[in-house]
Image (cartoon, rainbow, N blue to C red; front, top):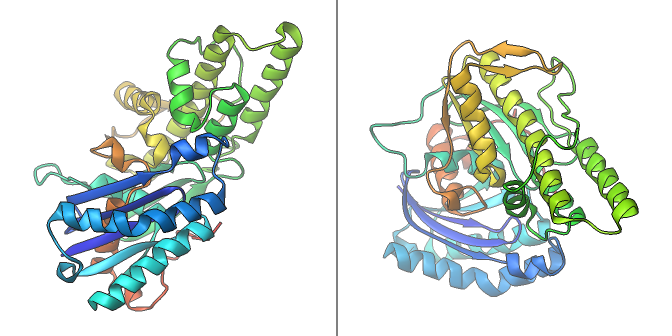
Length: 360
């Protein structure tokens, strides 16, 4: 089954053709990062206008790269939410217009489900994904811990209570004068820094909670920046590097510990990283280290042994970590395959109601 996917949830205008949910035939992304770098963040109206300009060219290029036409597609999938409403409507309109013209069914698809299914793209037959598994989806506007017993069966077990990790990266990068997007900027600065110089909070919240909170950590960095400005009048390169390293370490500690805590409870054979922040090398390294050592830390900092050592998996290509349309086409394939009745209802964004979805 060949699906044309369309993604416009934020500032990436993307289209892709994917066969049977795993084989990527094309994946075209027109990024607006240079444009939003000027304002230090995404301006929704600007993002929407850029989608209007680029959407048809990107769709055409994706079909051209795949060597196919819209008539040869079995279905057209689009991101229904969550995301910026003014951006989403561009992709939704384009997908439905194209579907009517080509006489193809449409599959409304959830953006977070897309990030989860990015880990199935380019899946090798001799190395299939195994269930049950726990997925940590972590990006600019969201953090979720999701338990998957099988395809299209999600159980949301944790989510962000305030700032998502990616959002915190962006805001802290701005405080440190590093620019936008913050994740790659902080990661590069952290390579030169001493992560132990500053004592930054790690909000595990409670023994029972799988939820995340990074607002306190962000505020701690803000206070450090204010103190440094008052003392030195400016931020030195050493301060920026050390603060970046400490911040990144604090975020990755919480993310990795919560992920492995969930893996312990749900006896997962695999743990997955998904979303833009899953490209962070320190996060990947930290999860790998804890699996190899066989333990993680609880909310009081006490060592907890892993009951088994799950396999860590993340996207095969770094371009699948950030927003793209191949992941939308993959999610659409698996959800319609395993729950056709749910997708027979127009406007149904996700088959499983346990993973709460909303527009923002």
